[in-house]
Length: 398
Ligand SMILES: C[S@@+](CC[C@H](N)C(=O)[O-])C[C@H]1O[C@@H](n2cnc3c(N)ncnc32)[C@H](O)[C@@H]1O
Image (tube, rainbow, N blue to C red; front, side, top):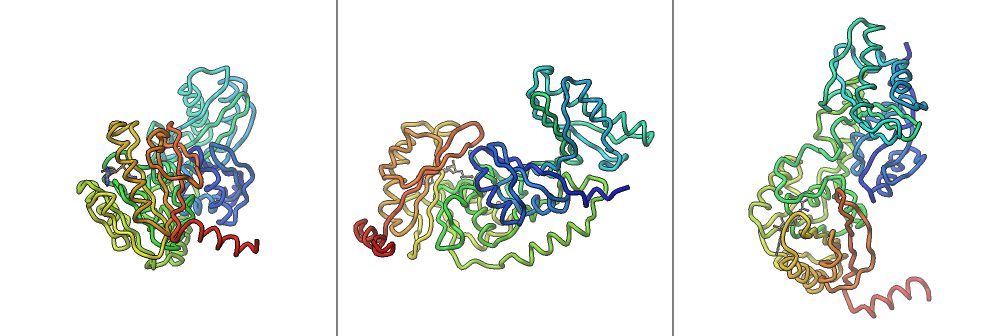
């Protein structure tokens, strides 16, 4: 029997809408090719070891899907027939457990659950035929996960090597209110271009996701260092020694300390306490200066860097009228206290964004769940704008 861990295959990494460009950067930086980019994710190719590396290191991806087979199926019976020919006994332990997830958009089937059932039956029946026993199956995603992607007549069957999505890093025990998904927070930080070049200031920190992700990124520490469970651990041939080696190497490459300051504040003492506790769980609390204060009283050290804020935007929290004042004060804070920094406001409410009252230098589109959001960038020049423009002209030799 071939060692399936060594087989190269296509790998699809899913991500939130708007994040594909940052995910592609990450995949390339791991030395893997980017074969295709779409709003749903990135396609690359590699071995199961590469999939493990991506699970460990990717900050912006959600699920690492390892392609098992690709075929055409017109209806559920065809799906069953093709799926039952695949060597599942080489992939899932017969005394294990598996679940099926799917994305289905095909005219012959209205119910995704029915496709999942057909897939589950095909796998279970094959086990009974070949091994005379079969793994349990059910809805839990914390063990082996098979993912079916069926569009029109095109079927792709994957092993979901992540299981739980990679946004679940394991550090956010206390979510406070309207927390950002960790993968989105990481993409926002990448979009700001902050890479320990200057301070990272995060007023309105809530549960601390942005500050914690910044600290982990600044240290070059793998995103999933604290996670102890992944889908690939429940597949046949998983070698814990390989996983230990990948983790050990990534840990050795990470920095122990940061020269840059990370400052996180919130007007709510409950939010600050949650953020601090989450940072402690993530092992980065010593790198973040927390304080309970209003936006305007946030300490902004000399030397520049980035200021990132994620005010409430009325979809889930707060009322629009009250929020309009907060957005106005966000703009005042950037103008009055953050000269020499780049300012960023992440919001899903364009009307509120207008209240900031500053001219944006860039607008980047992201989705927070179904809500279209913008990361608004503000250049907060240290000197007068004219001086900055003169300097730019000199630098470019004009
Ligand atoms: C949408 S939440 C931020 C969520 C955060 N990004 C996370 O991932 O958990 C907005 C935060 O702004 C805080 N806030 C509201 N008004 C404030 C003010 N005037 N000064 C400082 N913080 C404020 C709230 O307490 C809340 O925690």
